[in-house]
Picture 1 (cartoon, rainbow, N blue to C red):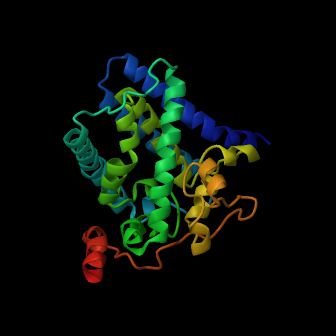
Picture 2: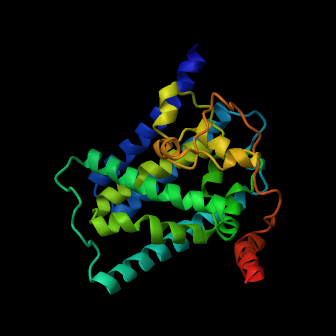
Length: 288
C-alpha cells in the first residue's frame, strides 16, 4: 500500500517541485530563459533518477540505450536551433504582414497568472493537437515525425527525440495564436515549463499511478505510452491534451489498453544521427 501511495504521488510531486523551483529562481532574479531551462533540466534529471527507483517496465535502462546520446543531441538541436528558428519565422511574418507582434491585444493580462497559463496551455494544446494529427495522417508530415516514434522502449529522453524541424514547425505554427493574441512572454514561459515537465513524465519509464479522471485532464504516462504503441491504430490516438482527443474522437482509454507493446516507425528511420537528420529531407526529395 505504501508503494502505491508513493507511485500515486510521483506526478503531482514532480510537477509541484518543478513549478516551485521555477518560482524560486524567478524570484531570485534569474533571467527568464535561464529559470525556464534550469527548471525543465532539473525535472528531466529527477525523472531519470526516479525511473531507476520506480520503473514502469523492468529492464528498460536509459544508460544502456544506444540511442540515448542521439536522443539528447536531438533535444538540444530542437531547443537551440529548431524552436528559435520557428519563433523567429513566426515573429518576422507577423511583423511583415501586420506590423507588430501582438496583433489584437486581446490577452486577459488582468487575470490571475495561473488562469492565464491554463488558458495558454489549452490554446497551445488545441493547435498542437491538429498539427500532431496531421503528422499521423499525411505521409510527407509523418516523415518529419517518424523519428519521435522510432523507439522500442520509453524513457525520459524519448520526449526530446524530435527532428529539429519539428521544433521549427511547432513554434512557427502552434505558437502563432498566442503571439497574435498578445500573450506575455512570462505566460508563454510558464506554459512551456508546465508542458515540458509533463512531456518528460509522459514519455518516461516512471511507474506513475492516477485516478481514472486524471486521464481526462492531463496527458498521463498511460495515455502517451498508448500513443507510442507498435499498433498503428493505437499510436494514431492520444495525440495531446486529453480533452481534444475526447472531443475529436482520438481518445483511447488506458482501461482498454493497459500496457501496450512500444514501437512505431517499423525500422524506417536510420540508426545514425546524420541519417536521422537527413531522413525527412531524403523522403521529400524522393517524392518531389
